[in-house]
Image (tube, rainbow, N blue to C red; front, side, top):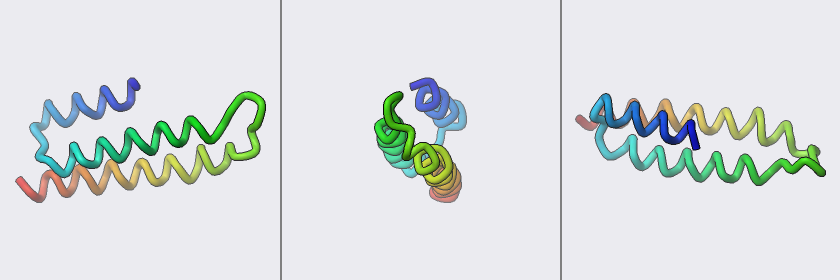
Length: 72
């Protein structure tokens, strides 16, 4: 939740346009999914959750921010 709140703060501070906010919704969904992949009893999908999902999230942050700056 802190990550989403801080990203929303960046979007507000930079007055980013709608692509950033669409990206933030996607990022939020990816973070929720990432946390559902791993449980204390089953760490078998830890690599998928940590490496793959964080990669998708970082690419989404970049794409949403660049698109928001481009659309201005």
